[in-house]
Length: 141
Image (tube, rainbow, N blue to C red; front, side, top):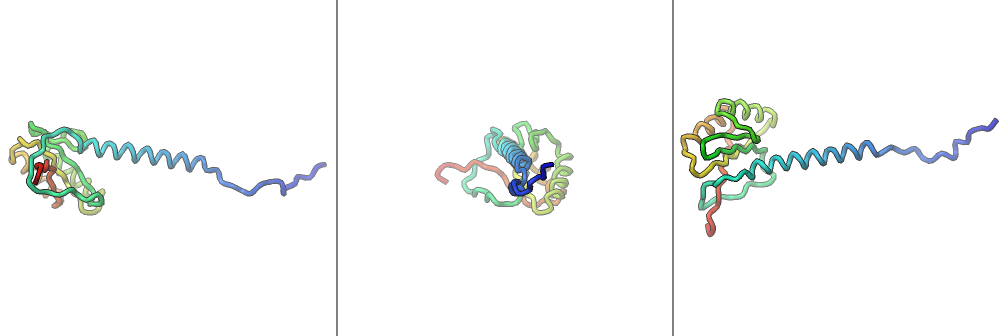
């Protein structure tokens, strides 16, 4: 009878294939989610002009982008939303983030202030004080 020789075995190693699969899935997830976030900010809107302004910091607080179309329609995360639903969604988002949340309003330049005011009141009701407006900076300013 032959006795097995344990000295021929190599060192114990880990199978890295499942970990590599998980890493690739995470990379794909973050690429897709960042693409969707950028797509929301790239909606074609004629933004209001401003003589001054500054670019937002890249490492700033978490941001929610709200688009206001020319007819007064609100879109949040690509879906139409009413002002009543907006304060609930913002409060939920603030609770999830657990810290200061920025709301960026991207509005058509022809939208009246009467459409923007309820949005700002919804932010206040949700407990959000950091509200910014996206504008087009005039050349030479």
